[in-house]
Length: 334
Image (cartoon, rainbow, N blue to C red):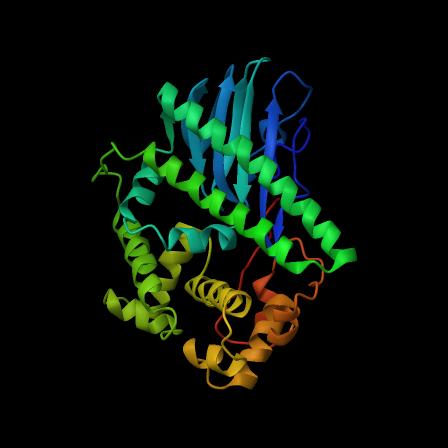
């Protein structure tokens, strides 16, 4: 979500939890040409929120127009299309964006997936003064913790003090999760609009729920399609259209998040992890993991640095002949 790049901002070096990134930008609308999206439609590459602190802005997301003012928030999803229609000179706010891979493990801890689809139907909401203060406090603290994590990571490169780095990262993860829950609270009183909740939305919702329950053992798209009595082809088309990611990419991401978590936070052997995630064998798991992270599972566990990649391109993995991941067609502006 880099369309705010020409504004003054706070970026904790795009706080990196291995490949995942969370970006926090402070926006001021008085600067010249701060919004690249004013001139053309922009395809968003991240998921996140914008909290309006002063002034106002009128924008469209996927063709629907929204007007924001102080005390309102909007939640956006990756692969949505943004266009800025107008904004006041005194516009101020905070923008937080994250890769879906960063948010996904947090979403899996949200038992009520319906709230996420309510947000998709009505992403822009005016919030109470209490909610505004609470979100602002969370964002301020997240900045501090993210900066701390960044500094600890830089120190780690020279001092090898990995436990401190891991603690700082975990603090940032937990605070990000807490912020997400606060955002969900802002939408709890809304009820789904059955007219705007399409059959395709329902298919995506059920897929995410099924994926959460079965990704460790079910890696094939056909399984999830059959759960909804759909052909694999039609099912894949719907998921790609509604979420911007193919079902195989969703499955691969879920597996990767879990694999990295088990490598980082358990004493399970690599074979045990491979078995727990239902890979054919340890060798296959190792090749799959390395193609996604540039590290073997053992090197990842040792904390060795990965090659610098802005975002993991799943098509590269597909071209190497690794299954479990899907083809990402087309380029997305970032």
